[in-house]
Length: 128
Image 1 (tube, rainbow, N blue to C red):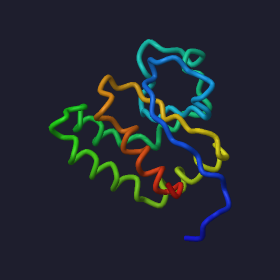
Image 2 (cartoon, helix red, strand yellow):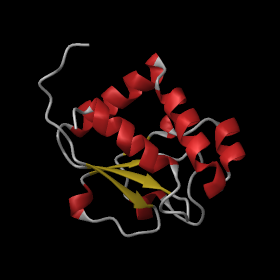
Image 3 (cartoon, rainbow, N blue to C red):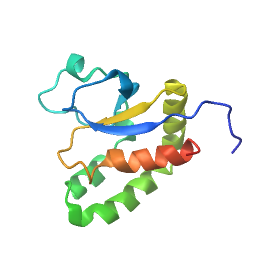
Image 4 (tube, rainbow, N blue to C red):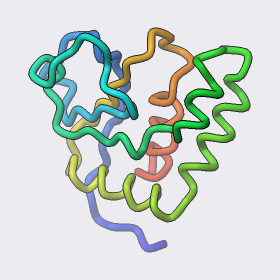
């Protein structure tokens, strides 16, 4: 695939329940379901990319169980390999236009969640 001359974005992850900060840059919610108890104004998002989140079946199967983390990562990465998902990720990187991208998620577990997997995949796609 030819490389574009687009600027590289730094990609971060952050819980939805943490305050938005200017250094977050382009904020994208990457959950299929809106985080409980939060309003749209509170989250201060640039985009909600629910379709980049794991599919419903995978999300329910995982249930944020650390014992399923390795298998979850493999399955989610497989979902992200589809041409549709690749296009969504390229579009997200283009929309950010070199700004920092902060992937916002609602899970309590800061080590075992989809945003971490998506961060890794996006970083690779971004040439990082």
